[in-house]
Amino acid sequence: MKSRFLFNHLDAHRDYFHTYPKSKLVLRDWLALDRTAAANRRVFYSFLRTTLDLTIAGLILIHFFNYQAIIVIGAIFLLLSVVVGSFSYFRFLRVQSHYHKFLRESGSYFPPLLARKGNHS
Image 1 (cartoon, one colour):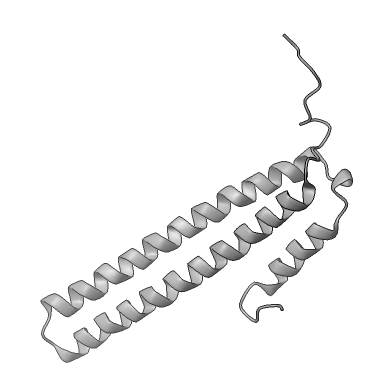
Image 2 (cartoon, rainbow, N blue to C red):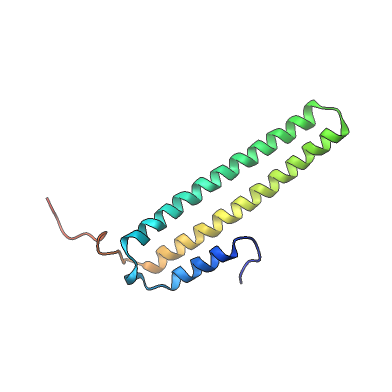
């Protein structure tokens, strides 16, 4: 079942990538897969930093100010941090599942440039 969240076009592209014959992939495609996995981690970490920033800002506003409007803004920051954190975790797992699915489906196949060709000692 397809999700109805943002970035559905990226998920459709990833699904198409799974159906493409592994023997037709070139080295550039395999390296792009590794770059995608690294970028996925970087984006997740940046979302975590944003979540931490929103949480800290919300707690500071609630703790140090006694004005009702500022306390409400602090509570909104805390709720927003939960939303951003949940969204980032969902997207991280979604992209990671496509990465692992591709690796499982490729089995022991490697592109010719990455396959070992004996000892060159």
